[in-house]
Length: 212
Image 1 (cartoon, rainbow, N blue to C red):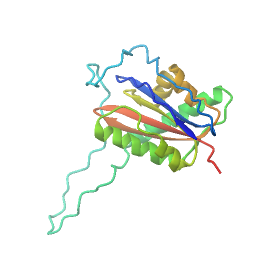
Image 2: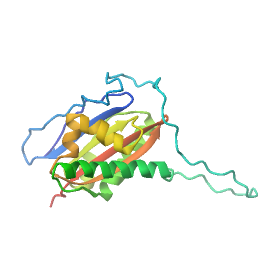
Image 3: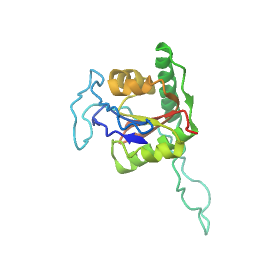
Image 4: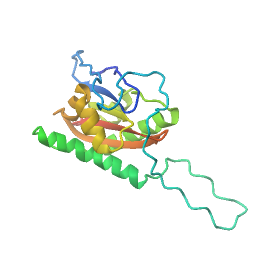
């Protein structure tokens, strides 16, 4: 059966959080990871609840829609209810996380992680919820495990200016996150990044080989 491991989450700028769910048959043992090394130029002291940082932050790169120049109609279309389309900055941020993760795995002599459609969908859903609820924490991973039919893991980050910095300066400097990035059992990953109060919040969902 799967064992869920509660994570230690550090809230700050930047911050990282790690959670691992592993399939171990009937083995009840699990390993717990804690984040303990953030980028040297930032304060790593946990802060609860999270407050806006006094440090300057990157300006958002969201693309604003042009004003509507169409004539008003009797029945205007309903506003979209789904997630906003990704911006070019968001796409670049996510691409850098993918690339930097596989670069670190290559250095360690490990195969690259392919892109998991299930992992992507789960990462998007979880980041959207974190942004909507203005939180930075790990939600229950069991639904992710069931959706992907595999053992899964998750890394979070908040406040890093680029996807490369998320991996190199954040996750690779924290034992728990580094273990996820370099875990041999993982075969694919899904990444999502969104802006939360002017800072990038990213989630990487790692997926093992599907069961059955």
